[in-house]
Length: 535
Image 1 (cartoon, rainbow, N blue to C red):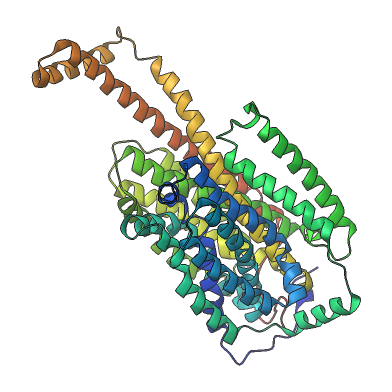
Image 2: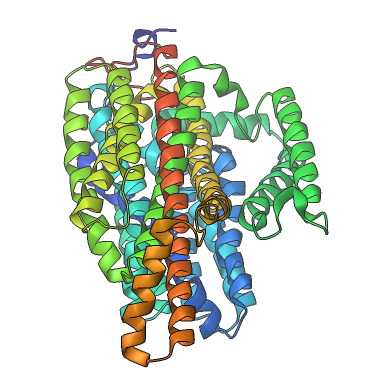
């Protein structure tokens, strides 16, 4: 089906689409920010609530699991409840749940509040993206996705930095209280500006007349699948994955495979499924799903690993590491605006996607070539290149993904794409932790092979260190032990740094492999006068 076949007359609103864009981007930024902002505050939350630090991870897991359950069914809910009603209800519940998190007096209460927050947050991303696609004609959809990209891309970039700064200076509760005024502003703006388009109202009325039953079996299978998946990703490394002696990971993996298989089979049998898996038959949409999943895995792996590297090996605090990472956000905004303008001028989205993936890969490769003897600015520029690549990718991908989909299928497709975007981040975080921890052990063992007393450089270092320490304490035996300790500390630092650099190397390889998927897509140019899913 060609883009021209999808052309529908576009009815211009009395309200500027840019006002609508600002209104819907605010709650999206708030929700995406909450997927990463609490990560750096977990030990503070555990301490403040007198809980074990390892148990505080459920604050993240409960949010992600609840969010993952709702995201793929957000299109179904928007159709049944009305997208405007669902969007406003999601904003309201998310804001109230944020206040509950900030007021939590126990770990159980904050975990439950985060789950409610995740359920509400699952309706924000896909609803706001669908509103944007309806508010703009096709030739301006690149600019619309630029607005959405500022929220969906910048939020995970600034989340850890902002979370660390707020926690260090004001306390962890303000991470959640910050959402309250933002949520209230977003609610009133969206209440005043957002409307359901005519085609969605007609589709909703049609479904109500047909009396389609609720897909209870699909919901149960979805809950089992996504909860097992999120717990496995969150706790797998701690439980040693398939080496877990208590078979917790084995059980979760088995339930996940069975749940996913049953879910796919069940949903494909229904005429109006809870999750629109048939949208994956569109070549553009399927390719974009794979790319966004892997690209966000790279983004989160980079965003988690780089601050950890700076804080553990370079001695930066959360604020200082944030200052090092913040220039990439400025460049991201500039590139998003340039890419949006390029899409509006008729440039094929595939070219921009390919360039973005290649740039992202080169940035990670540059980062993998760093060492422990670098200045802050030598970290800033490769990070800028990585985020610049993702900025070039995001808006074109969102245009290419929906350009050949019929408007009736877009609501569910947006939710599915948002789910894969978020799950890519979860997988990237988990894989980065696995690589870092296991490759650190590998590099430590390899470095040990050369730490032989008969090795001249090692012997020279020990002799010099011992002589220097002997001048301060005058005890030859103690100086020898301290020299060995210095050598061991240096070995541990080198092993840890090499492990972090391995994360960046793997990210670069993933980015390069994704480039080869772009030619599989069909031509993706936003033609003037066409509008995907216009009212």
